[in-house]
Length: 420
Image 1 (tube, one colour):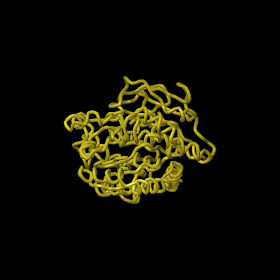
Image 2 (image 1 turned 60 degrees about the horizontal axis):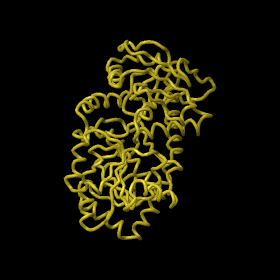
Image 3 (image 1 turned 90 degrees about the vertical axis):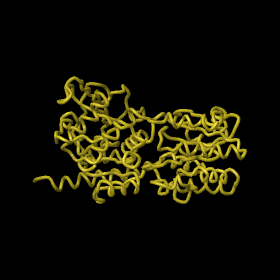
Image 4 (image 1 turned 135 degrees about the vertical axis):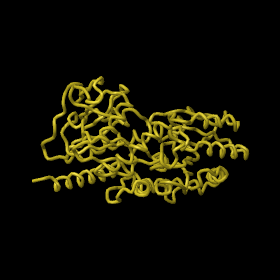
């Protein structure tokens, strides 16, 4: 997670770190809005330092809140500048505040502030009505807070996290959830996890789905051909998109691909995504299965290329063991890709009847579902059309509007409780 600061100074528990203020340029303190709008400080850290689903969530939420609701809301960005990067260019017009400190110091400092009840960060923030933490890190503050919970994967599959991250989250997450004024859960499944694992009152949790925008739509033949020429010029392809980590369950996909190759299918599996943790043993399975020429790890690709890659895929696979939401699933459906995904966690909730669902560790069932998509044109076309219809209501405009409604409810409740 990431911090921001608006005046040059020193953090009380880490005085060797210099605070930096940014408001368009370094050195200015952001003015507060006095025009009746809600003033929200939004943690944009995931979009500064990451490139996967959390980054897209933070960036698109900030953009659509500012663009669609400027008459009701002032968005002030907040992040830790430890990587030397800044917010995406599309957010360059928004005021921002940053602190420069080590990533681990920030994480531990946020936890310490909650454990000690010390809202030390408050004096460094711009004035405002509330603070929104868009990933799983919430410092102690005096103002009301909103926390987005994407998933509790570390609870469900602790073996798929590093021990240090697991230890931190097991202490911090229940505390952050308890201390937040309101929780945004990105799916009903995540809300259910919060209620069952942490006994979080359901009235505190608001389900607000993620979305897609107009970029994610079927791409014309010329665009598809250009991308196919670049990434798989000699063969049709299957597609997976997501961070390379064990819970994405690439191993089952590789085993299913081996079954399909034995049946004579020519397809290559394109694996799109940045490297995460604990993935090396998974990647070694490609060689063990003799698939060196049939699996292509293409890394992260430009956002502009994703719609064409989805559109050109003969089938999109998401056999994850656990997803809090599953944004690539939604993007693939919006682009008209036939989808085969797991029947666990949030994926059935998002896919509805617009995908073929299989048990995540059943490679035979996964191979059979993909075989059907590749050999039954009517089924493939049905999934393409059904996916686009299913994805249509999931828009970032809706995400922003529902998030703003939660902000307003939190602020209104705080006002009614304030002493007169």
